[in-house]
Image (cartoon, one colour):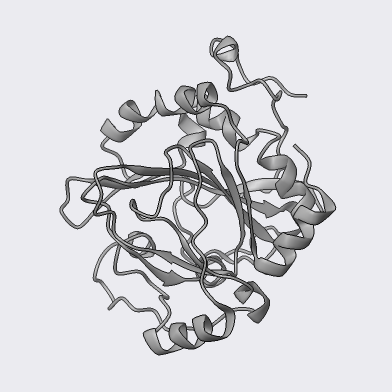
Length: 279
C-alpha cells in the first residue's frame, strides 16, 4: 500500500491519517485467533488494569508470535511508515492495547515522543504509530481522541506524574495513572485552539499517528471490546542513544536494523503454515 500525495498532506497537516479497509476480515481473524494464547501468558510482557485481572496491554508480541511478526513487517503498515519518515524503518515498539468491554480503563492525554525522549534516548520525533483495528472502533467502546495539528507544537514538557517507587518504572508508562500526562488546563487550551476529533472505523482499518500529536481515550463502558495492534516505527537514521537504565528489550527495541518486509498476502490463511517470506 502506497500513500497518495493527498494522504501525505493530510497526515502532515493533522498529525494522523485514517485508512479504512486496509486489512480484510480474514486477515483480521487470523490475527485475533492468536490473542487467547497471548492473553493467557503470565509474563512481564502483559500489563493488567487496576483490577489486576483484566489485560490492558501486551508488549513485544511480534518477537514471540509469527502472525504478529508478519504484521510488523507487512507492506500495508511498514510501507507507509517508510514513506512518512522518508527512510528505512525498524520496530521501536509493538503492543496490543486491549480496552476490554466494561473494564478497559482510561488512557490519559499525552504525547508519545516525550516517553521515548526521556526514557529511551530517542533523539528526534521521527517515529510513527500504525494502529491496526482488530475490533470495530465506535463512539461507544473507548475510541482514541486526538487534538489535530498538535504535532506541530513540538514536545509539551510535563513532569513525571508518578511518585518515585510507586511501581516498576516502565509499567508507569502504561498504567491508567500515566506518566507525563498533560494537565487539564493545558489540554483545554489546546482543544480550544485546535479542536478535537475521534477517528473511528471497522475492524481492518489502519490509522497512522505522529508521535507528537496529543491524544487520549476514555474508559470502555460498553459491551464491545476495542482491541488495537499498534506498531511504532522509528527511522533507522534516528537510532536510540545509550541510556543508563534501559527499559526491557520486549518493550523498546534498541536494534535499528532495517526491517525486511513480508509478502502482501502473508496474513492470509494460505500463508499460515509458512515462515516469514521477504519480498
